[in-house]
Image (cartoon, rainbow, N blue to C red):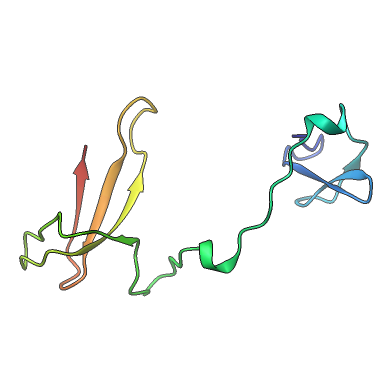
Length: 106
């Protein structure tokens, strides 16, 4: 990886030089070409819509949770690292029936 000297963003190779997508700065490639790893762009089917008001708010669970408000057994969930890196992540739930939200610490 090579980072922009102007703004610090990650640069990508374009027409034989390294170019910053954020500020447009260009520079010669540092190091050997074998040292650089490129990634492919995500396709639309790998993305999860999280816009405000969307009915889908994460991945559906199996029937391993129960909403305390309505007793429904399926909820959307997302996982976030809320503590230190050596601590387990927190799961945030939203009931698919009533919209109640809760969290679970592992």
